[in-house]
Image (cartoon, rainbow, N blue to C red; front, side):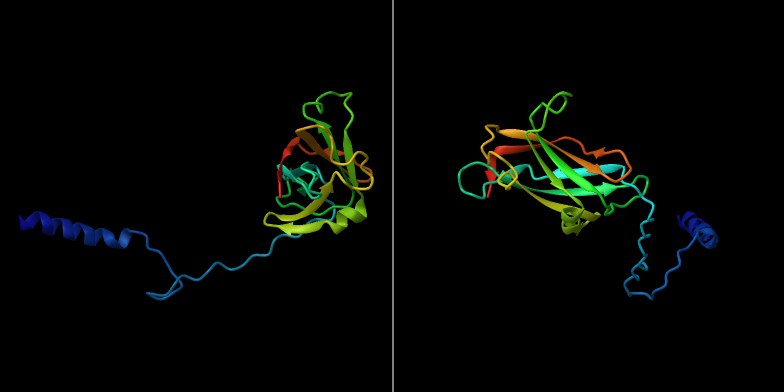
Length: 184
C-alpha cells in the first residue's frame, strides 16, 4: 500500500520543476501592488463628429405646477469613430420634437425645435463617466416656444441633429419622451 503512494510522490517531485511558476513583486502577506496609471490618449485635433448619442430623460418634469410636463434634461455624447472616447466639438445642435410616429414621414414637420448654437453648447459642456458630454436643459416654456406646455400629446419623439461647418449633419437615434407621466 505504501509503494503506490511513494511512486506518486516521487513522480510529483520530479515534475515540480517543470510546472511554470508565477513571479510577484510583493512579499508574502503583502497586498499586490496596483497597476501603474496610464494616460488617456489625447484627442487628435483633426477628429470630426460622425456619431451623436442623445439620451433625454424618459419622463418630463412639471416645473410650473399645472399638471403638464414642461422640462427635461438630456445628455449628449459626440463620437468620432473609430476613436474610442467621446469628445467635445464645435458646432450647432438642434433638438427636434415630433408627434409620436411622425418622424418617419418625410413630409412631417417638427412640433418644436431647440437650437444650441456654439456658445450655448460650450456652456453645456460636462464630464460624465464615459467622458466629455453635454448636459442640456430643454423646456417647453422657453420664450421662443409658442404655445407653452399644452401640446395635447401624451408622448413625443425627439431627434438631435449636430452640424459642423463644412460637414454634413449627423443625426441621433429616435428617443421617445412621456409628457403625461411627469416626474417632480
